[in-house]
Image 1 (cartoon, rainbow, N blue to C red):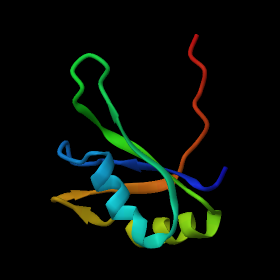
Image 2 (cartoon, rainbow, N blue to C red):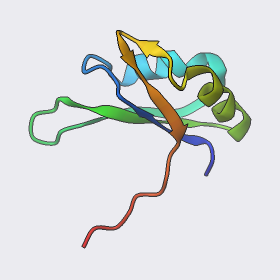
Image 3 (cartoon, rainbow, N blue to C red):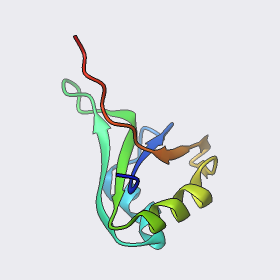
Image 4 (spheres, rainbow, N blue to C red):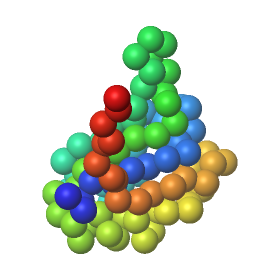
Length: 86
């Protein structure tokens, strides 16, 4: 599952469409989702982008990790599996 990316330190104004637009130039995207607070609906400042193949995901990491988005330096890396909470 090296084709699913974590995108952190997103500006609060970033939505799913903006995230999709930012990554679409690197290849076919399966999904792009900004995580939101379930009570307020406000962005939590991070999201996930899933590419159709791993090569495109690696190109996106190389190009966008550490880049500036609306004054914030975003973090882009391979998403880790969610850890179970007790």
